[in-house]
Amino acid sequence: MIVCKDVSQDARDTDKDVIQMDGSCRLYNFPKADKRVIIAASGSRRYTEIKIAESAVCTLSDGEVVYRFSRYGNPAAGRASYIGTGSMGTLKPEVIKPGKDFVYGQDKGTYDISRMLNAILPPEMLPANAPHYRRVGSGTLENGRNYVDYRYDAPGYMEVIRYYFYKERLIKMASGVYTLSNDGEVLDGRRCVVKVGKFTDMVDMSYLSLPDVPKFDVGQTMMNSPLSRAVGNSVGRAMRGLF
Figure (cartoon, rainbow, N blue to C red):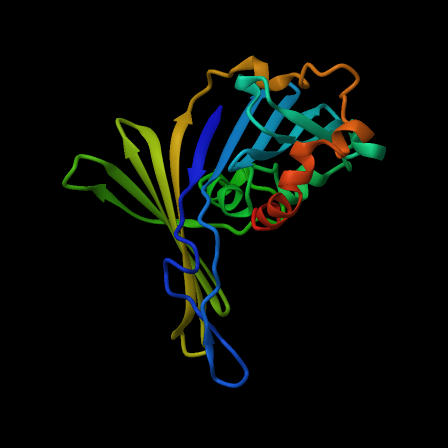
């Protein structure tokens, strides 16, 4: 089971402004929100959750069948609402396309987190379309943490990922992605930092069952609920930032 949080600085924190066609500069007002990812798997069942603020996009697969739904609110406080991908927000199972995981690999949350977790897989476990990262260094920091560096190079592109460990437990991942000129000069780049809260083979089995909601009660009543109306626009913008 993996629980981690993308704490990368957003565009405003890193001063990445937008230059307009007329030469003026406009600073976007990006909302600062960490993205939390939960991955749980046991046998043929696998659960993935991407959570931002009080909203989450969830996927539960069992063999060749997958359920996708969204959750709004706090389940622990009994104030959660669910919306499926079927008609009127109902829960509808989908069939996983044969060979999808072989070609693209299993989804591990956001694009950045999936890429970094796949990068350290041994070659025989890499999906067919995955880039091959090579180990380029390792060492021990002054605080006693150990690190391992991986790197991937392609024409006009380079990425370096550092994995931090404490007593052999993965605690953080940091990535630098760079766009290069034909001469190898760095033209642009961005950073991604992920804190790993849990990385263990002990699984919370409660994640591997569908929410206990009668008939997935997400019909017209929920679609018109105050919660749904309140989060409609803000959640939509937040969700588009997840991928």
